[in-house]
Length: 188
Image (cartoon, rainbow, N blue to C red; front, side, top):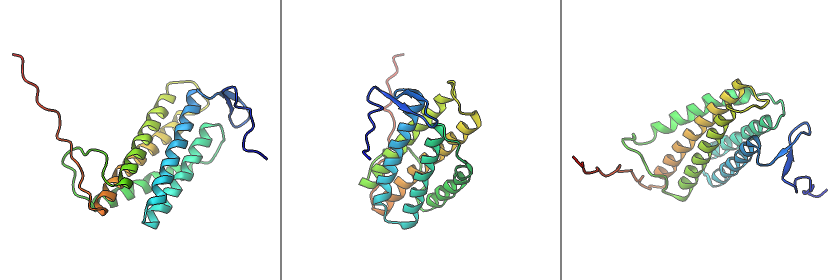
């Protein structure tokens, strides 16, 4: 059986249940961005040298499939998504204890893997914003489910920020701090 079906050649796609929608529809755009996020998480996981973290990132990838399938109309159980938020928080807290305290903003970058974690973080923030926008439009998703997904993505982006910092520390790459905006001269 070939991978191509030709059913999307005119710019539409099927949701679960067979409903056809345009590929540019906001809901489809969100789960497309979830796919992009998932791909970047896979990229970061493939280069991560700590097996426990690598396995946790694979679990996150499975969660994103669950979220995407729910957006597409599949009535999946969301208990794992609810349970994962405190697990993510615990990892953030444990990682933060290993890092120097932040006293200023840092610029994304550093070691290659840290830079990729920052890219993943910024994509996660975009998906979060798209999910917030879904709350303002009519669809079959309830607000409680969207709020759960937003909280999950919010915490996940924090995790990738901490992972980027952790990776840089492990690689002995100093973080570049943002020195702020130059002071403007007063015209008075």
